Image 1 (tube, rainbow, N blue to C red):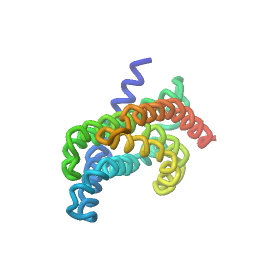
Image 2 (image 1 turned 180 degrees about the vertical axis):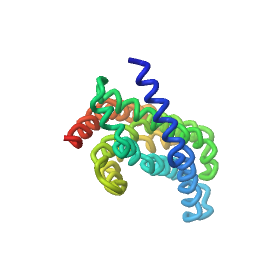
Image 3 (image 1 turned 90 degrees about the vertical axis):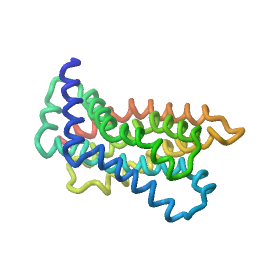
Image 4 (image 1 turned 180 degrees about the horizontal axis):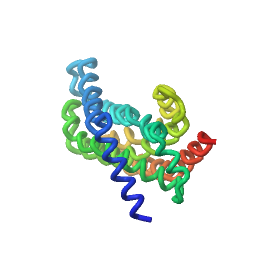
Length: 223
């Protein structure tokens, strides 16, 4: 079973990078968010340092949502989704592979760009390490949660706005725990490990619930 899923993963990564430049577009949007907000706040380096992790997390969240509407819609438009539904492999595993490919093409570049973009918000090295660690753990949750909204809106034209409305409330716990853990790395006596473990728990739950719910939504949408 590893052969078809590996082929599907590589196909999804190639399409995500080729169609609309998924990785580049996400990083550029991330860059725009992180650079524009400091201009609006002003040259207060202490303030930027305090809210820097939140700026980076909000930018990563919005950049992830940017490409979610294409997660299943492209397959629906060219008929590939029907083949996946009629295939002999569990649809839940297909969704997992597509989500992992989406994260590799969009979420991973955001994580890699974070140390450089952290300079714009005056973060210390320990804060940069904390933000990177929380993004590594938390961004997969954004993808798996977003997969549910993408599956629900797959049959709608221009469903990007509805997708954002559906997904954003569910991503608030990820945002809260991610920012809390990043801030706790330099704020005493609040421990870093507690919110980080909560963030990991949310990611694990979304990894299980997301594919099951998305697969159910895809099946119901094709009935």
